[in-house]
Image 1 (tube, helix red, strand yellow):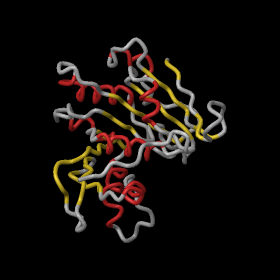
Image 2 (tube, one colour):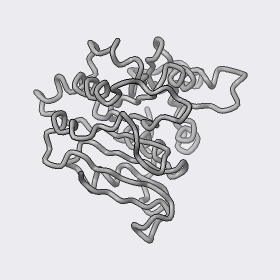
Image 3 (spheres, rainbow, N blue to C red):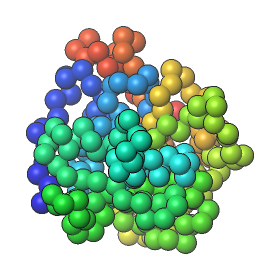
Length: 238
């Protein structure tokens, strides 16, 4: 059993995706960009774990997924890429990623021996894996989180990345709409501005049937917003 973390303190100086979702519950797409440090990924995993929400966590490449799932077991690695490491430390959890196949993994609760307990809490999917898993049923996912959706300067950018992401979202939405279930897409980037072929632009309208589908948040230090926290928030609808 995974114990819940303490109630989130929105004035603790870190970014909380839960606060944006509470402020803009009708939004389906949340785009969040900042320099590293405000706690974007930490806040997402804390929220979905506390709420027991099944999720899909997306990384850009096969190597990203493999590093995330196997880095802790590689003696040559100096840094563990598992995003649950700080949460396990802070809340006494034992959640670990496991590699299923190339570009595909899952997060599981584990025992002290590292053995998986129960069903996966969420899936890990490489952006490069989208086409080959379109036939799989991900309809129980409440969230899709694409981390670092703005590519680094040294990364090769795939053609029509935005279209590929939309196709994947439609795959997840396949059964959810008929059941009246909600899906929220969260996109994180470590950057000071948005400029990427993955940006959904006006085509988000055909996937998200809300009048104002996009909540855009800049979670950066020292840029306007609330005076009570150094991680400032600028939500607005497109």
